[in-house]
Amino acid sequence: MDFTTSARPGLRAPAAAPAPALTPAPWAGIALIAVAAVAVEMAVSARYGYVRDELYFLSAGQHLAFGYVDQPPLTPLLARITAALTGGTLAGFRILPALCLAALVVMTAAMSRRLGAGRTGQLLAALAAATCAEYLGAMHELTTTTPDFVFWALILLLVMRLLASRDPRWWLAIGGCAGVASEAKWNIAFLLAGLAAGFLLTDARRLLASRYLLIGGLIVAALAAPDVVWQAAHGWPGLDVFRVLQTAAGHNRVVYWPAQVLYTGVVLTPVWVGGAVWSLRSAAARPFRPAAIACVIVIALQFVLGGKAYYPGAAFTLLLAAGCVQLERRLATRAPRARRIMPAFPPAFAAGAAMVAGAVLAAPVALPVLPAGALHTVPLQKINYDLGEEIAWPRLVALVARQYDALPAAQHARTTILAGNYGEAGAIDRYGPGDGLPQVYSGANNFWIWGPPPAADSAAIAVNVDPALLRREFAHVRRVATFWNGLGVDDDEQGAPVYLATGLRTSWSRAWPAFREYA
Image 1: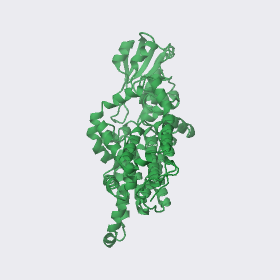
Image 2: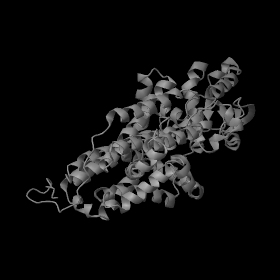
Image 3: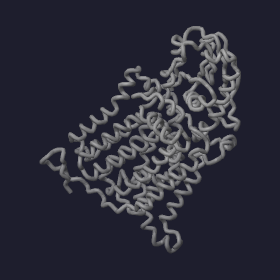
């Protein structure tokens, strides 16, 4: 079949394998699965508390800029808008990520339809996305991962539209989405590199010879430019963050592949593995092979580079979609025998039930379904770090407030609040005003840029700050409290010391560079 290429008037694109015929989408069923996924997320949305990154983004949202030390500006902007629209409530803050899970469900089903899935395959693909432990956990929180996953899936879906239609004008939409994604997380560069490789390795390379691709690239560059300019103006702090992250590369490689199985779930692992093999080898999947190659490349590349296991998580949307095409066809061949053995349970129903069962088993790791105190005896935060970082933030802030209130009234005006990491600083920023605390300062990431403390402050209550650093900068340092979360849960704040430091040796303008810590 020939496709006219509007980018080259008068010329025709070379023959390409036709895309599979599209089966009407079972929208009612897909919508029901998406709504159920949102309902599950919202049911546990306020069970624990904000995760440390959310607290950081809430603070960053009060300091809107074209860039930040450790991420582009989109997520802080979303945090500010979401908090404003939902009255600053935790449950309201979690509505957007829950809706993003619904978007992943719908887009995964749409990908499977593009790949040739029938109604059953599309429903299974939607259910696979809704029950994937990685998506349940990631879409529980409003972090950079939330828009990153959504834009990855959307770009993959748009690329499939491009490959099916051979209409190069789709490059404009792809460029626009990639540009916005670059303002969410720099991670999008890996998907774009994988797609470039996928097109170059297949006959779809002919679609690269289009002015629309050039315009799409210019759109990406224009949308990414503000963050790049900000990074350049501030000495490229993102590179410092990358260097710190690379210190964990060896550990990340060791846990990478087991984590892929754990994150997607033991039930869905055979589905996405089968989807990867089918999409790379099957003649039926050939029209969309560049996208499949891209997904496989980015998953493998993150392993080679020592990236965190969840970085390529959105690539599994396409692999799950492909796996459900294969699964549907395999179930169809077994249907007659299965009906004789278990007439009341069609094979597709059994496959869907297995996906749901897998999600139920994974739920305590992915979501805060257990009482927070259970993390003391069942340390699930060792698998899902964020579970332990959602608890007891108001308790920590209350401890700091008690130490501040214990100071003589005359000392309040010259005492600042210091925090050792951005989670603690974000918590004090969020809850501190209600406890009568002044502005918090920290050397962590963008908090350092928002400093230093007022020049008149000569003392500090410091939470979890290196005591050696405090003793270099202050004449007197005394430990006045230790934080315990009251649940016995092992997390980054459990046992954190609180110091009273007095007698600043120099000025804050001279001392502040020593507090900087980009990580």
